[in-house]
Amino acid sequence: MPDTGLLRDAARTAAVAAGEVVVIGLGYVGLPIAREAAAAGFAVTGFDLDPCVARAAAATGTMQATADPRALPRAETWLICVPTPLDPDGQPDLSLVQAALDTCRAGLAPGALVCLVSTCQPGATNGLCRRELERDGLIVGRDIFLAVSPERENPGGDTSGPRHIPRLLGAPDVVSLARARAFWGRITDRVIPVATPEIAECAKLLENTYRLVNIALMDELHRGFAALGVPTRAVVAAAATKPFGFAPFWPGAGAGGHCIPVDPAFLQMELARAGAASGLLAAAAEANRTRPARILAAVERALGGSVAGRRVLVLGVTYKPDVADLRGAAAVELLHALAARGADVLWHDPVLGVAPAVLDGLRRIEDPARCDADAVILATPHRTYDPARIAGLAALVFDPHGVLPAGQAGRVVVV
Ligand SMILES: NC(=O)c1ccc[n+]([C@@H]2O[C@H](COP(=O)([O-])OP(=O)(O)OC[C@H]3O[C@@H](n4cnc5c(N)ncnc54)[C@H](O)[C@@H]3O)[C@@H](O)[C@H]2O)c1
Image 1 (cartoon, helix red, strand yellow):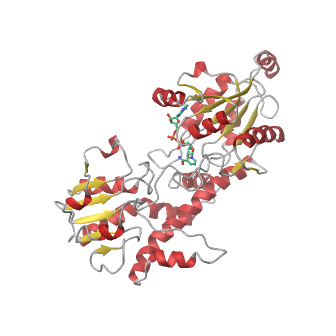
Image 2: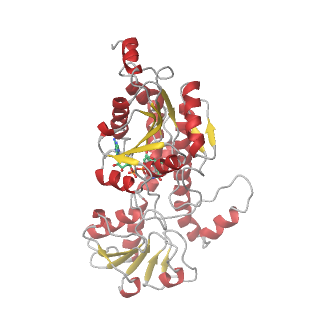
Image 3: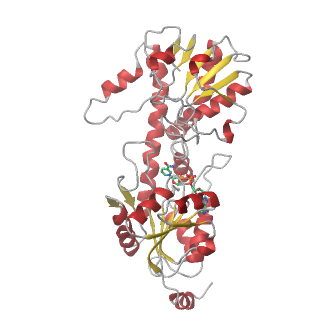
């Protein structure tokens, strides 16, 4: 065991740099926070393992940024904004958070605050984070401070940016909470302190679990309403007029992105550990995971049992409309599955710039009207797509989102 007192005495000589903030991970979440903190008057240093990302952040002219951990200041505030993906077995992978904590530890001075922004499992703040930060003898709540404020960004949404989305905030002790509240209060309009870190962690996971379950429900009911001859979107819009007790969800090709298919696994992992795994959540996760395969099966059925040698055009490949992000996109899975079954696959997307490597080997087209496809799948209904024109693009048009006009019997297929 290190001698805590000695360590603290030695470390006291290296005081924190007041007003300095280090943001670890400069992606979708970290970069906007870093910019907002800089705009609020903090001296921000961004840190990213990827030197290109660090260079791009520095080029904004709003902050210092580096890929060299030795160049980091002894900042007063450290924000962890690194990815928290699932591993190949579908289990949460916290190795990047672990690496970020190592980076913090190397630069921590007494008085510093570390705030976890990445989405983690319940108990991560009080468990993993506290354990790692205290390894050198500094004590949370006495020498250093710790909080969690999970990100709620909604890419492409009407409410976006760190200033406008209310921030949940939890901390293991009152001093940490006060420190974190003072920081976030300068860059966010509304900070909502909760009683424990676990409440903040679980609330974040509940938000996306709620979405996953409702999306899976709507994907299933979409086929059901079609079987009843009722247009799903009209049903949801009608139900949404109820001023209480109903939040609208819309059918789609399967929930993608970094969060909705991933975060519930963090909750399920801890529920399972506590002997309380959720069957409903497991069913929703499985329904979402298999949604592209079910769309593919419907296309195969409609084309006489096989897509081999048939030309299939996929419209929209990003994970959600009007957002140029392919992470977890159902369309990408669909494209590869079609290609693996011998289809002549084409794709079109007006939102995506240069096609990333995940689309290598798949043919992009510029004009959907000129490709003479046997079937079209409207996988992501970007705003610029005209439903009436799409419904006429091929003899078979698959509509997982329920956005194409009715009255095209035998042509528009609801999946
Ligand atoms: N993207 C969203 O809309 C969103 C919304 C809410 C919550 N979140 C959560 O926020 C966290 C960050 O997600 P993101 O979308 O910003 O990820 P991202 O992939 O866009 O960016 C993360 C960045 O962190 C860098 N990085 C990885 N490990 C690092 C390390 N050890 N040290 C320094 N840099 C490192 C990567 O190079 C990358 O540039 C995740 O937990 C995610 O679940 C994301």
